[in-house]
Length: 141
Image 1 (tube, rainbow, N blue to C red):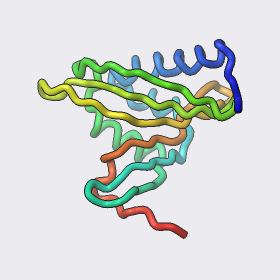
Image 2 (image 1 turned 90 degrees about the horizontal axis):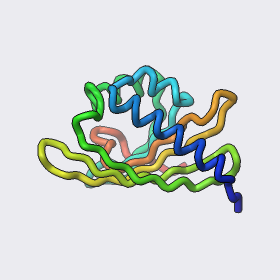
Image 3 (image 1 turned 180 degrees about the vertical axis):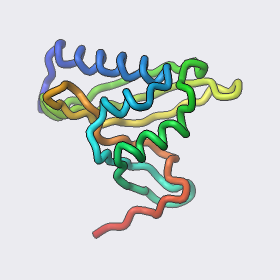
Image 4 (image 1 turned 180 degrees about the horizontal axis):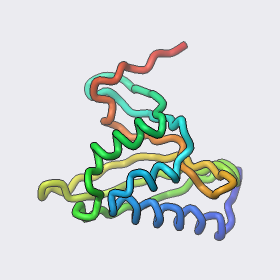
């Protein structure tokens, strides 16, 4: 089992600090610059089964514009992240977040697989329940 150094843990924390600042501003293109495409997504179809797909950069940008609008600044977003290093170059980060939407506090949990590139960390896989409205369910084989 890989045990990361304090410096490696800090590099992931710093990456998310940058990501969160860009998300707050609604800087979708800059967020896309922090990813590797095609991006893998795993979610579920409400009332159904899991759903998976890959997004191109253009599909990611379109989906994030729809989901984030002008940014997350007004959502009173609080996140707690737990990185699980699989190796020096792969880290799965579990996030529990609380935000305010139309006066209601909502909690969610999601995970991101970050991969180390020559330019630093980048997210490559997103896993979160509830995004699969209208997506076909996953099929084995």
